[in-house]
Image (tube, rainbow, N blue to C red; front, top):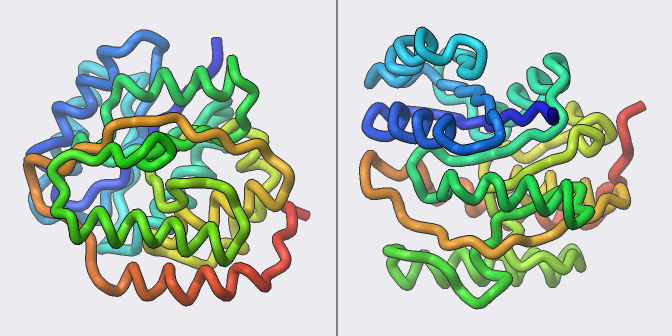
Length: 241
């Protein structure tokens, strides 16, 4: 059976973390979870530790001191996944903006449809976003249009954070060369995989705004993505030596 790991970065997600863990573990397919917590002062990590007792083999926790960035959290998780021999590695938010049931659809896009990187896409089938203000939808949608124009990558949801990687994608990429640390990280990872010749496939999902907890979005992440995409266009993407 394939080993499947869902990486969930957290910062102050006490309202959501237990429910999201139990929902993922309620799915068929024996998914494992790695929570990477950036020193949440609200006790998120303590909740995860309590859940490790009923799920000792499937629930893992890495604690970091302070908010070190979304990109660095995922890079830490990718390295951990490779070290522990997982075959498929997923990114997913803790706040239920991504439906855990869609994990299986992303997995099938890789195992059945031949994708190397499956993307849970908000925009490949129109706009599938619930409870976002129109201003945020427009910023997100046109950001992806901007990325397509600059990079020439025909992906409609370039900033999507709900994805599934085949192991060999992460093994091939030079993770130490990844430069963007905020939401631009999502663009850089997709572009790097594409430039290295891997097949990307978008899977339409419905994205729902969080109902509990506080969003971690900030204006700075958009600036990094805007300028980072221009720099990315002129960077040579190399595989791991």
